Image (cartoon, rainbow, N blue to C red):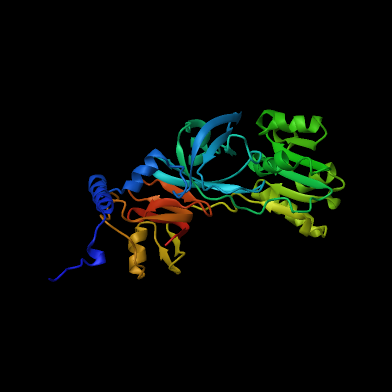
Length: 367
């Protein structure tokens, strides 16, 4: 009698077979999405998902500034006071990225953190966050980064020089390190007393003797400059200094500190390193490819790139299918359909349609 023994790999577990069929059925039902895409809808902050956050509250600070309370996803890592986080938020169907300093205390009981945003004229993202963002909105996050932080060995004397929203990274430091900073001076510039972001809290810190606060209200006292800072803080040469504010102010401080031979004691933070100039056409750099092309103001970036031999993603070439979308890391482009410009500061990563966008100045494309 002959006995036939089945091959091990021909035996299928009923449970495994049922699971496979269920997965195939789920994929058929959810096509063109995958089942994991639906997990993102139900639990967008879960571990293993793309890092996201949920806006829990928008708390007004001044007439044009607000603190945004964000609950981060489970893969969020601890940050250092003074660091910033890049936030991606969808506005009118386009994902916009901006960087904002983290202003909250470490290890909040609710597990959230805050960024504080000042609405700037024509600022698409800042105005949206301050005036229109709603609790429950899901946003994209990067991990916190930045070197505008205190060293491990806290200086005996510290000076902070800030203007406008430049107070935000410093507030993150003061809220977490005021006890370690035993001799601290803060010089802050704003148009009026009511425009000082965190004004009541800073004044309370000063009243308690935790900091020495000097407010410069520019509407009545004029602009803050390096010379006036030297007059206000006679012992600045003995202090480690952190400064954040407009580029002009920072450059003046760098020049003053260098001329005094104490440039190594000045640390600066720039949110917008330079003003982007809008024009007709410009140099387009594809950062990953390494190719740079000169494009006029009437030629789509997609066409200019392909003419230079750059392999580009594309689809309908009419601005409908979004098959050509790439991140604009820095620069200015103009929509050829309506003339609207899109501006990205370094690192923003604003998504643009290259088939209907032309260079309106120098720009870097992440491709």
